[in-house]
Image 1 (cartoon, one colour):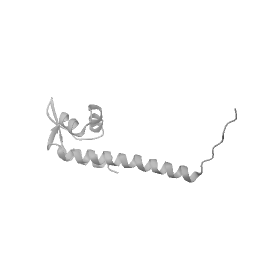
Image 2: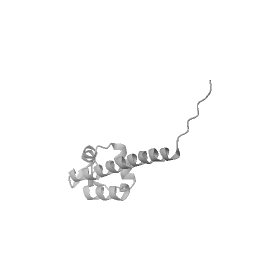
Image 3: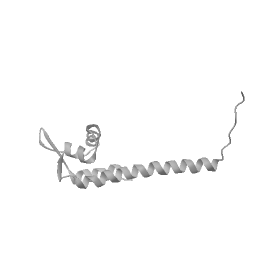
Image 4: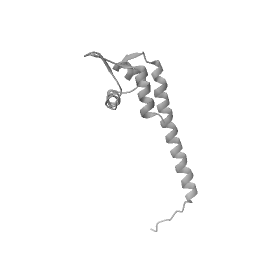
Length: 97
């Protein structure tokens, strides 16, 4: 059996690749904007559970943000709060495009 050789013009590949890159970038920007917009729904000093619930994130992501520098407030050993304005600033500084 003989192999068939298929020639695709570079212009076609470039257009397809460019379209895919634009689609991926657009989806990522929309995801980040949605996350930032959702922070408006947070109370001024939300606890970790409220933050995770409103933003639709898990423990792993929130803990990663904290390790990246997101400021927390320890109101008691069991009550850790995050100021809404601090979270918004953190997201802008670290994830804004």
